[in-house]
Image (tube, rainbow, N blue to C red; front, side, top):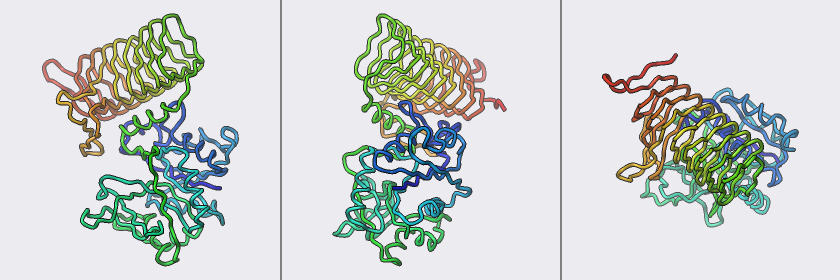
Length: 429
């Protein structure tokens, strides 16, 4: 079985996390998102994968290579030169697929890998022209809704329907299996009002013009996330941490307490007085402590220093220092960040309402009461900096000492508190 993964996008809604890497390469529990997917596909019987790449594609290619050397699965690549929709992206796989059925999915998904086995088993048993995975959603008007007939086959695809239409609540979950006839439907697909070639339009052509059957597979009670928003990364991190087993490969000094499943990588030293509550993943060559408090659902990359500080439910990427009297909660900190002594993040509003975050100019409700900050790569803060809930600091920025960050900070910006002028911002370019 072959698989095609669409992994060309920039992941704009996740910036500044994706300012230095494509979204599929964001690491969780020691592996990029895309690696978790590839290992799941391999376990489901996939032996060849085509990655449709674009944004920062060299990072993906350098990491996975030909696939055989590192993962014992063949990996090829196609570069998407233009971003003209999902049908356009899928069409890059035509020569790779040739004559056999194939699984196709979006590269920003993280799902329970048993879903891959389930969709392939259902496709092979039903022998339709295609299969689409579906999720039950609470707000159908925000999704493309798939209507199934009494036999479970796709009857209609409606984009963001009015609730008055009563078309159900089954939304596209982004995992498909198709026979190669789908490429003939793609050839007949015209641009939508968004000036893109939509894969859902191709599916409707397959049904109406080629009399093809597309069966629906409803995902129930299994983890699924398209990780389009920063706080969804924290959910995905928690899901993966729930599966880790306790393993201590580093150097543990006296008077260190572990509680629950904790993974400590090679070369990591955990110094005296440190208390670590699992589930927790700490990678290689880190220095943790002395007297650090690492709370559940925390992932720490490689070559980090977490000193006399507290970290909970957070993702800390490699080469980052949180050394002195810092508090980090419900946050994501990218690589090569240095926090000055006393830098702290607020993760709970005083009114305990849901935290909102600015995503591409719109204030979006995170759906959670606890959400801290997102710090891009290569950021430095001075001493005693405080960062308010839901704020983002762009790549390569500097935050001056004693500053209260009350707004998003653009990349390459010096942001500081002047005693006479208040908040000042200067470009570092």
